[in-house]
Length: 461
Figure 1 (cartoon, rainbow, N blue to C red):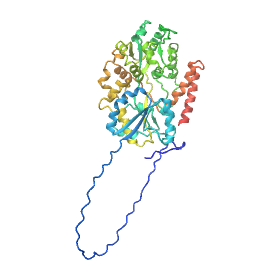
Figure 2: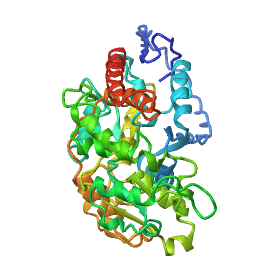
Figure 3: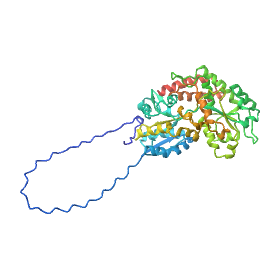
Figure 4: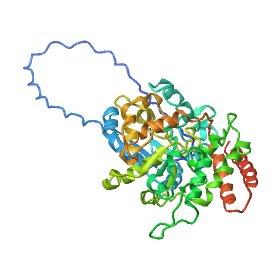
């Protein structure tokens, strides 16, 4: 298929041009009567037959796969040969950060070249490309392929919902992301706190108070009870524990529900003892005990584990531990990645096959190995029985990290997501920042976020 250069108006619509050829044949004229026999001449020597050259082997199909999450790289590096051998293709991976991908993707679609066959995005980014009707959305509908696949009914349906619009599934879920509390056991004990005794949010806030505000380390660096941002895992946990999410079963915003306000009235109690997530330094800060706890989904736990794997001395006597969140095991889920097939791909069927197999195939233990490589729990509950999840993990003092995350996943409350969910979440984050900064009240933040969320939904419908 020839790649098309699209106009701005139609750059998300895919057109295919077909051509037809006409072949004409002529009838032979009647042959004249045979002439009288002539003197027979010796037959000519046959020409020496020349060997025919063999056609060169066909080039393998080449697929381009974009992704954002660097912590997925160990799994993808490990499985490249497996995928190429199984599907007879050349698979090229390209890592882009979120901003670069969000800007580059529509540019390549407009240019008609340079776009990926498969694109893996943060769950908050895919909605930016789900505006309008199916004709305007640049991703292939996956419903029929999923139904016909061996993975149908084996993947958590709730994880598909956030990538669905008008009944059409445009993305596959890579993960589940239940939340636990990761904590520095030795650090807490310096303040007389045994975190194993912390069971409720009141207990947790009391532990933070025992550490106090404005605490410093021996070298003068500030020390915090918790690394947590307004948009991150602790807040997500409190919402679900209060039976609210950003959107409800009817797809409408839930920001004005009583449970939403209650969740953030609890969250703000952590504010004097917390520091915002420092993405570049959090692993080192955690190791040093500069913050003593963090609400971590499986992927964030994996980042901490990967970041300390080469420090044998630290891992051998690691002070890090995992436990259920306050008032757990009922917890939240934070983050997620979605894989989509691009409509302009020249190899849509092959791209779909690769995506589904990469995300969901477990015939040789691929999904359990995902947890080993990345800390990420796959969204396939049948896989959770694999004994690999019961292995002791040195980073958390020999705890069975996989089993603890699975128990949290099994306790995840039911909640509904769709393409509107992230729009509502973004609207809330903007106002919540003003609230934390003391510029507006919680009630004002909720009212403004609800209004802005509904406007954003209308603009993206």
